Length: 98
Image 1 (cartoon, helix red, strand yellow):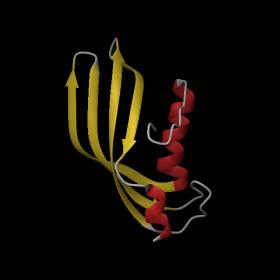
Image 2 (cartoon, one colour):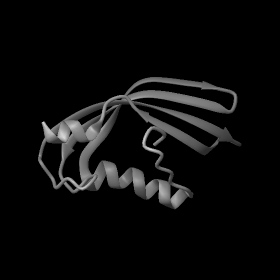
Image 3 (cartoon, one colour):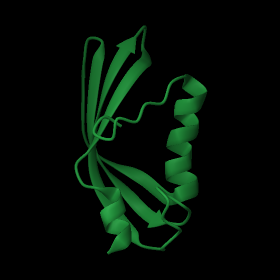
Image 4 (cartoon, one colour):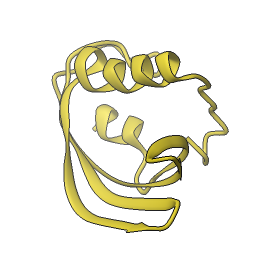
C-alpha cells in the first residue's frame, strides 16, 4: 500500500494479506469499476465494500459499513502478477471512527 509505505512480499504473504482484509478484518468484496490491461501492465479502479468485523489498524470491530475507493497497478510477467501497487483514495480508518 503505497501511501502508507506498507510492503508485503511473496505470493503466500500477499494472499494472506488480501484474505485477511476481506475475510477477517472485514466481511468485504471489491466492486470493480474499471479494468485496463496493456502488454505487461494492468490497472483496476474499484471500491472496497464491506462491514468491519475484526480488528484493523488497532481498531476493534465496529460493525460499521465501509466504502473505500482504491486503485491497483499490476506488473505482469508471463501472464502472472509479478508485483502490484495499491493506492487507497480515502482513509479506511476514518470510516471506522465515524
